[in-house]
Structure formats: C-alpha cells, structure tokens
Amino acid sequence: MNNDTTLENVWQYEAREYFSLFPAEERIFKKLLHPQMRVLEIGCGSGRVSLPLQQLDISLFACDLSWMGLRILESIVDHNGTIILQADARSLPFEDSSFEAVVFSFMGLISCTRSLGASRP
Image (cartoon, rainbow, N blue to C red; front, side, top):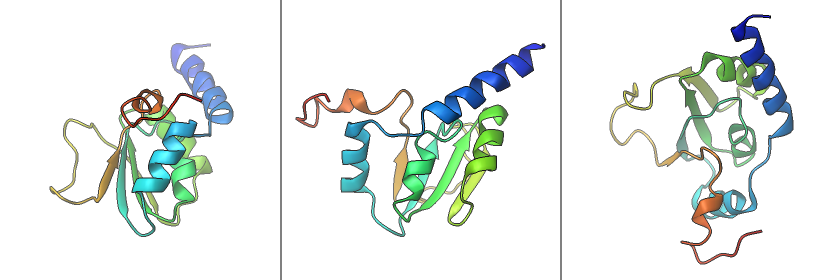
C-alpha cells in the first residue's frame, strides 16, 4: 500500500466518524448564520462541518487545499446550494466582501466557548 492510499483510507474513516458539530459550534452557527447567507468555509476537509452547515439553508462555498478530503466531500455532499473547490486560504479566488460569513473550524470551535461565556459540554 502506498502513502496516498494510506492517507485516503484515513480520510474515509474520519469522514464517516466525525460528521457532527461540537455543541459550541452548533450554538454559534445557529446564532450567527441565517438562511440564504453566502458562507465560505475554509479548510472544509472531508465535510465534518460542511454537511451540518448545509442544513442551515445557506449558500456554502467549501474549500480546502487537500484534494483527498475534497474527493470524499464531493461524493457525499448535497450539491444543491454548495460549491466545493480546491483553494489555498492564503490566495482565495474571490473578490473582497463576497461572503457574509467565513467559517474556519479546524479542530472545532470548542475553544471559543470560554470567550463567549459558555461552559464546556
């Protein structure tokens, strides 16, 4: 088994096991994101956050540098209202002010709970 195959197997495992938001993320997204908003998700990976965000009826642009994660997301996402693209967060192909919100929840937004005055789950 080559290195690419090993990494793809890891991504597929993670994609199946972690399609849920942390409680703090759920609270933040429900409070700040509204239907029809244009939202950019940076570092979407295989979709742990992308899939639950789709349920909020937003226009989601999910991007990541990793083609392996994007391949998995492409195979499971509902493409109605979601655009998936490979892009470097340091050089995004969008004009300024293209989005009403930007989400980057690498390793979860659980670390935000204290600054929001919420307790950890």
